[in-house]
Each structure stands twice: as structure tokens, then as C-alpha cells.
Length: 194
Image 1 (cartoon, rainbow, N blue to C red):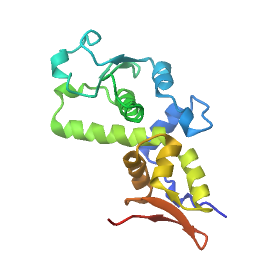
Image 2 (spheres, one colour):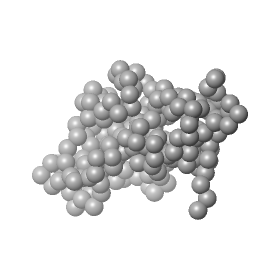
Image 3 (tube, rainbow, N blue to C red):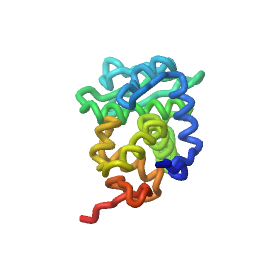
């Protein structure tokens, strides 16, 4: 069996995510700890509650699930997270907010809708590479040669939502993927039509 590397082409955002991950020794995807990553980069994580928010007017952001404020130096800043978020959702949001601070030096409060859409897309893309790195995606592909792997299995393996796992696989296959399986020695993707 030879795993085809044609699926694993790297892009700029994946390179950035890999640079972040290179400072850690994760052996499994469930070990990826966003709080540890934030701490390493000097990024504080605080509750999105009025008593903790001091750099912006709380009423302007209290409807959000998260908000980040970058520092003016060294990819540092503060991430505010709404309390009570479900664990997987919190992980995904924290990853995206980390990617904002790591990659963007602007506050979104003063940005246009076009700029916000652009940086949101970039942060989500980098977060997908950060939480579902190629080294662990290869494990999924290898396993799929032996038996079909459903998107729910992939999401469980990476401790992410199914929609996030589908997004990551879309970055690889350029189409929706609901399952991976091998046929005649070739890896393929399956999309369910409902």
C-alpha cells in the first residue's frame, strides 16, 4: 500500500499552522491543547464577561461567542470566550481566535465587512490545519485503506465537529466528503446524497 501524497499539498496557512505546531510534540490529535498553545505565545484567554473586558465597550461585543484583541507586538493579545460553550465548540472558536491573533494585527471592530470575511476565512483555514494536521490526516487515510471511515469517525478522532472535519477534507479534496474508503488499492471519497 502506498499512500498518495497528492492529497496533501501544503498552502500558506498550513505552513503557518505547522510552524506553530513545531514547538510542541503531539503524538495524537487529541493532545493538541489550545490553552497551552496560547500560553506559549503569550496570549491570554479570559471570559467574555463585563468584569474581564477592559479594552473595548462590553455592550459592543456581549452578543459574540468570542472576541480577540491583538497586541501591537509579537503576536500577543487577549481572547475573550463566552462562558458555557460546549467543549468542542469552545475548542474550535479558541483555535480560530488564536489564528486571528497569530496572523492578523487588526481589530475587527473597525474593519469593513469585506475585510472581516477575508480574515475570518483565513483564520478558519489555519485553524483547520492546526487542529487537523497533515501528519494525523495521513493516519486517517491509512486506516481508510483497510475499512471505510465516516466523517463522524474523523470528527471523533480529531475531537472536532463533523462540519469542521468536512471543511478540512474539502481543503484536501476540493469537494464535500462524508466518508473515505479504498477500492482496488485507491483511496476515494464518498458524498452522501440525501
